Image 1 (cartoon, rainbow, N blue to C red):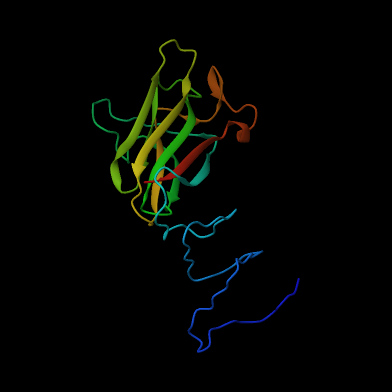
Image 2 (image 1 turned 90 degrees about the vertical axis):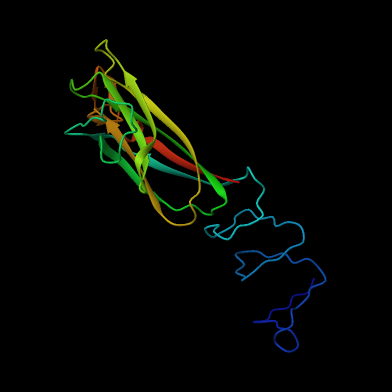
Length: 211
C-alpha cells in the first residue's frame, strides 16, 4: 500500500472540486466547511451545537443534558397563594435555576426533575414545587403534597414537562418551592443533614427530541 502526503489539493484552476473515485477513510478529527452526501453519514461523535441540523427523522434523541439540584436549607419559606391560579415566578422560594440553549428549533424539550421538598422544622402540612421559564411569569408545571399525620414532613416530588423548542437562544429554567424549608434533606421525621450532600442531590434533565 502506497502513501501520498501533501499540504493541500486543489482543482486545476484552484476552484474545481477534486473528485475521488474511491471512498476515503479519515481518522482523527476532520474539519470541513460543508458535507454533502447522497445517503447517510456514520460517525461515533458529531461535534457542534446542532443549530444547523435539518432533515432529522422525527422522534430521534438529539441531546440529553443533566444538571444537579443540591441539598440546601431555606431560611424563610414562602407560599404560593391558596387559590386556583398558576403560581407566579416571584412566589415561593427559588432553589434551582439553569440557563439552557436548545441545539435547534426543530425539536421538543422534555424536562424531568425530582427533589425532596421537606420541612426541617414545623412550618407546614402542605408543600409543593413548580417549574418556571424566564420569559413566562406563570408556572409551567406544579406538584403538591399534603400530610396531616405530622410524621412525614415532606415528600419526594417529581415534575415531567414537554414544550417546543423556542430556537437557539438562551432562556433560564427555575424551580421554586411552596412552604418547605429544606431541599433534598434526609427524611428522619423532620428533615436532617444525613448521609452526605452528594447522595441526596437530585437531577434536572432535558432531552431534545426531533420534531
